[in-house]
Image (cartoon, rainbow, N blue to C red; front, side):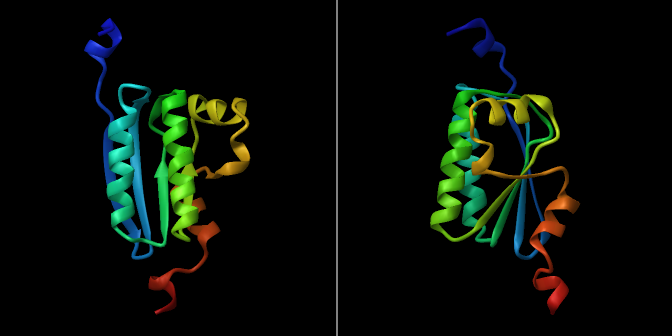
Length: 129
């Protein structure tokens, strides 16, 4: 086991429902080979919530390795298969740079904030009731 793995801080997750049709999962910490399995598990739990849209807030992410990118690509593919939307909140260089330099930018819809995501999504159940 590497020294880094021994001292790695686990990812932190927070889930909220800003609207009935939107689940937001906030992720904080480094997403690398050691933490990607817990990231994948949290995403699976978020999909079980059955919201039409999943917003991933990656703004507290401090490092995004290939393993984390792989999880994001899988999650986007699952969203497409399930006819759901997935938006990424990305405001930090480590995340944006990893997505851009790997040529994956066109696979994800990225926004700067939850407010921006809700604008992109348009009125939801709460606003039209």
